Length: 247
Ligand code: PLP
Image 1 (spheres, rainbow, N blue to C red):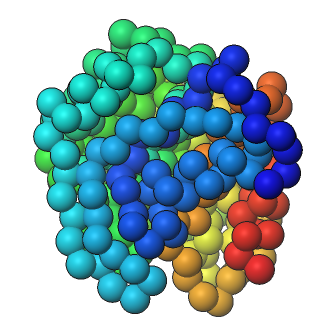
Image 2: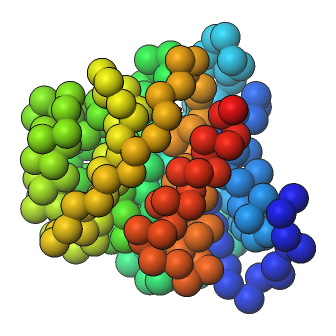
């Protein structure tokens, strides 16, 4: 652990799926917040059964179960959102954000597991883009997610820029987008776009693919933002943390 845990003067929350192997989801998020010295609440959207080799099953919780958890936690200042599972759960989260108005929301638009299992119903996509993204400070798709969300090819830097512009245009209210280039052919450059400027973050390409890196990155960004770092600085520091974890 890096720092002494800070008690809840600033309330932090992760809303995500549970991964018993600990690599992704709520478990990875809480571990990341802990590293940054932050205590966080957690609300579970789905229960997965998986390990490093195999994805066995996924069961989303009902909207009522999600609502009860959100109600029990109450308003939070900084919210990270990961896997949602169903359209109904996305709707519950939209209701929660509209009611509680957090200062900052970072959303990792989890559509599939690394092994290819669908983690969000296809019918939830329009609601995600039109209802949920507009309430977010930052959305962090990977190349495949950016392509599905924009209906554009996203395989190189120019296409990443075009997708970032489209993502912000289609979700008025969304402040910024980070397209993760971990699967680019020749580099692992991420692209941040805030509606005005593009920032590139180059990184090392890892030969092994780890599940949960997106969860850890978005949680680390939220952790940095909660400590009054700028978006650019938060992404840069979070990327360094992920690289260190993957070494
Ligand atoms: N959230 C949960 C609960 C998962 O099980 C997974 C992948 O299996 C993810 C998120 C996505 O993880 P990644 O960070 O690899 O995109």
